[in-house]
Length: 177
Image (cartoon, rainbow, N blue to C red; front, side, top):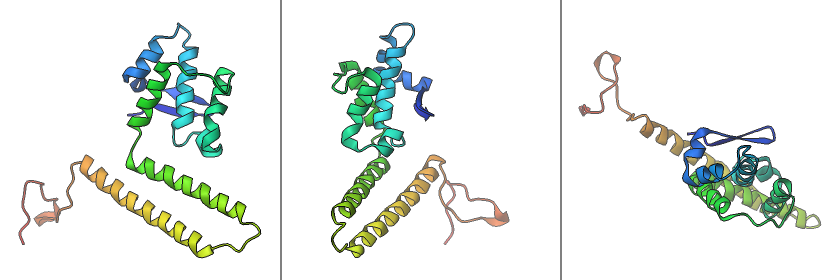
């Protein structure tokens, strides 16, 4: 299910997204031109989508004010309740283990960068940094394996041995030992 995409500097809103009750209310509450609803949804997506240019390039504590200024002309703009509910819905449906890991690894990378910045005049603990990066690689490999397993489950496939004639064993057949 595709809800939103970021193409260039604009958010593309797919029909499936407007089936979610908070987004549907937000969309339907706007006038015919939908500019206000589009700005609210764009704010939510640019602030929270993992591959948003704002998430990728601006420190996390500056994203909200930057986007509020861009879309509403005021960095201290108070969002309506409907917008807050839509944002919470978006965050909850994207709250996967792999996204949590990605966000935490990004935070750790930020702390490593800050460590390097603060220790420019000191001797660095290269072993600590090397160990962290090795941990990142292991985590990535673990999630690749989990993703493959999930794909197998989605496809209803179970790893089985071949049977006579090279055909795949049916999931209802038991292998002989």
